[in-house]
Every structure is written in C-alpha cells, then in structure tokens.
Length: 153
Image 1 (cartoon, rainbow, N blue to C red):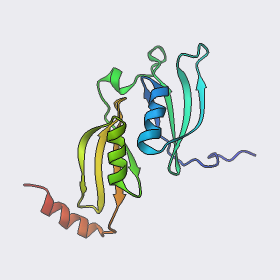
Image 2 (cartoon, rainbow, N blue to C red; image 1 turned 120 degrees about the vertical axis):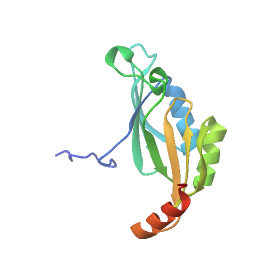
Image 3 (cartoon, rainbow, N blue to C red; image 1 turned 45 degrees about the vertical axis):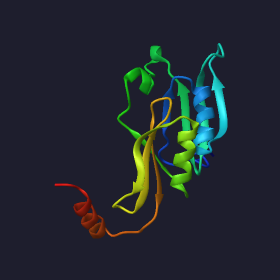
Image 4 (tube, rainbow, N blue to C red; image 1 turned 120 degrees about the horizontal axis):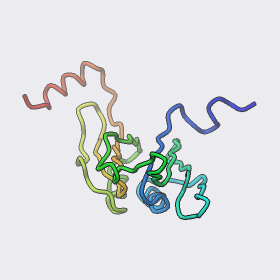
C-alpha cells in the first residue's frame, strides 16, 4: 500500500514555474547543489512538463511555463511575492556559489536578530531564495529585545 506522503518527501514541497526549466536545473545544480531525480519532457520535447530535484533533504518540483494552461513564471508576472527559504550548513559559501552561478543579491547576507546568518538572492528565473544558517538558539524574549534594538524607530 502506498504511503500518503511518498518516501523522501515532506508535507510541503515548492513547485516552481520557470521560463527555461532545463537551464534552471543547471543553475540549481551549480548554485545549490541540486540533484536531478527525474524529468518529464513535453510531447514535442521542447519544454519540461515536470522535473523533480533534491536540494539537501528536500524535494523541489519544477516545470516550464505553459501560459495556455495558466502556468506563468515570475518573468511573465513581473516578479514573485514569495521566497524559498533554504537552510544550509554554510550560508556564506552557498550565497557566493549562487552569485557565481548568476543570481543577483536582493538582501546582503548578514547576522540577523533572530539568530540566523541570512540573505536573499534572486535567481536568473525570477525566484527569490532566502539562504540561511542557524547560528543561535534564542528565546522569543531575546529575539524581541534584539528586534527592538535593531529596528529604527
């Protein structure tokens, strides 16, 4: 009997629509160490209907945009309101690798009041990636005090 959540998957899995899925797979490999699990090309072989990647312990699904079926990329929409949060052992190394692979800085990498080293990049396909390494375990009160001290009034 099949498990309700497939082996190796989590309850939430990002599913990204991009313009140029095959190029995106190559970027995610170089930037984030993604491993390709599978890809399913369209009938005519010009696009990817579906791809399954693994980044760290998590799955990421990916497909080319198909506007005729409602699937539009951030490029088609003029941006994205969401970010994919990626925890890694060394945020500095991954941030630098993402930039070298072609990402752009959205928020510089820095130590944040909540205890993470954190920054954001925009990949060449318009998706925002928040890259973080957890450095400190803090209580909600400590985070509140640090936030109050760091946020200008």
